[in-house]
Structure formats: structure tokens, C-alpha cells
Length: 389
Figure 1 (cartoon, rainbow, N blue to C red):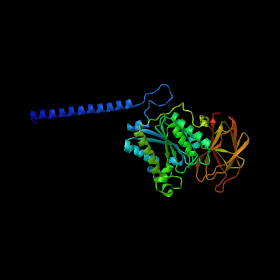
Figure 2: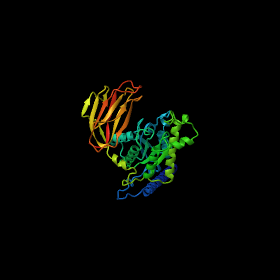
Figure 3: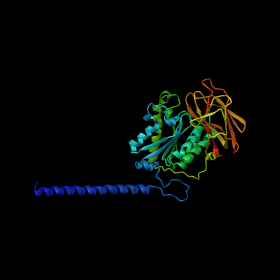
Figure 4: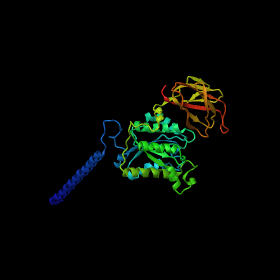
């Protein structure tokens, strides 16, 4: 190669390197300006402490910045996505895909939902697992109502629902919360509670009932059993959620929460404390299996002491489940049935009008069973209450 060509080649390479360096500097400046703009848009933290997490970017800030987010779901079988034909057709899986495709956002989901759960069961599950959960979530869904109707009194439902909202807000980094009104929930009572709570705390309501009615599809297409949404029904759930997120982004919604806000339902403050007890002072005929207590013979009994004015019981219901009697301070309260056609954890309220306690609670197998049950066994997980002993 001649010296002239060599000089031309060297000059060309030098020009390319200089141009590349200029473009690199330009890109870095653009990124720096973008970050400055993002920081400028962040709210300034206030010293009063009335509003939590004002200095932290919320769900919508992170979506705009294409960052990863964490989602918490507390619910029942619909919260689990039961009814979808494939895993990627569940409402929350569709949401994760949409966030990735539309916003390049990676969504990490923790799902505490449990089939058959009421809001009492959800409150119990959350409190039993909250220390193992992440400290910070950006998005949360609460999905109850179907299993509460006619089972959990409305006053208890509203109080525990509000307490669950406040706990998630205060303990898990003030996530944006969506309250899901399930397609099988009635028109009065339970959905009205959710709407009032959404207004009180500036939350999002996902009312699937209207979407189902206006879809033009029959229940046979939208559900698998008149209750659980099919893959098509799950699509309607997802559409309502992603449309709400789009709208909130357009309206520049901010996620704020006041710790000092007075509860909407006065009795919700009675559930500030959660207590779980599976230690028994009297064990007659029950044996221990994987932490649960199992008995099957008439007269087998357990006794323990709990505190608080609200007392509940957590069971492992099975096809062999029989019936048993519940006593509080020596007084018969009610009979409960441990039967279920499949193995399932369930949480029952014993009562919420007791004196503060402590109280002696007793379970005694009575030997009765439903026609479907194959035995009279009873499997107890533990007692729950709203005061620590």
C-alpha cells in the first residue's frame, strides 16, 4: 500500500472515530437530560409524614420509564385465574404480556389468591405470609366477593376489606390498588362496599359485571360454570384493567395515601392486630400432621385460649370431612362442617361480638357428616383473632 493511500485510510478511520465519539457524547447527554426531566417530575417529599412514599416513583412513573414493577394479588379462585384454558390466557398473565409489549415493562407477580377464599381468608393469608413478601409493590389487586355473599356478614366484610387495603398501602410501599368486583357478585351490599372504599382511598374499581352484560356474549361463553370466567371472560377482566391503566397514564394520576385518613368503617380499626394460634392446652384424640391437628372419632376435642372480640377458624376441608361443634367459654356457638369435595383451605368467622377476652375456645367432633362425606374426620389449621394473647 502506498504512503498516500495509507494517509487517506488513517484520516478516514480518525474521522469515523471522532464522529462515533461525538454521537456517544450526544447519546449520553440525551440520557442525562431525560433523567433530569424525570427527577424534576418527581414529587418532593414532605416532612409532615401525612402522605407516605411521596418521594418514591409510583406505578405510572415506572411504566413511563420502562422499569420493572412488582404486583401483588390477594384474592380467591378468580384471583388465581381459574377458568382460563391456558396459563397465558389468565387475566393477570395477559396484563404482564401487555405491559411488556406496550411499555417494555417487566412485571414480577406474587399471587396469594386461594380457591374458595373470602376476604377473611385473604386477610388471614396476607398476615400469615407478609413477612416473606417483598417490602415494596407497585401494583396490587384485591379480588373477593363471590365467596363472601351470604357467608360473611356485611359489617365484618367491610371492616376486614378496609383493613386489608390499609395494611397493603402502609406495609407494602403504597402500591396502586385495583378492587375487582367479580362477575358473579350481586348488585347490592358487597359491591357497594368496594365502591365506597375505592372513593375513600382513590383506588380503581374494575366492575366486571357491566362488561359481561354489555359484551353480547352469553354466560356459557364467558364462564365455565356461571361464576369462573372462561378464557373469553378473562379477556374482559384484562381489557378493563389495561384500559384503566392507559387512562390513568393519560391523566397523569399520582398514587398517594394518607396514613392519617379516618377509616370509612369504624370497626375496621378493630382488625389492626392479627393473631394466629395452633397451640392447644387440651388435646383429646387429635394427632398432628404437617402442623395441622386431625381427629375423626365422636368426642375428640381440642381446646386453646385466644384474645380479642373477633374469632375465626382456619380448616383444611376434605372429602372425608365430618361435622364438629364450637364452644367459646363453655357456651355452644355453632356447628361447622369440614367436608369439601376436594381438599381446600377455608376460613370461617366464629363471631365478632365477644368481649375483649381472653377466651377459652373448644372444638369437639360430634360424629355427624353430610351425605357426600366418606368419613367424620376434622382437620384444624388454627384459630385467628384480632388481639394477641
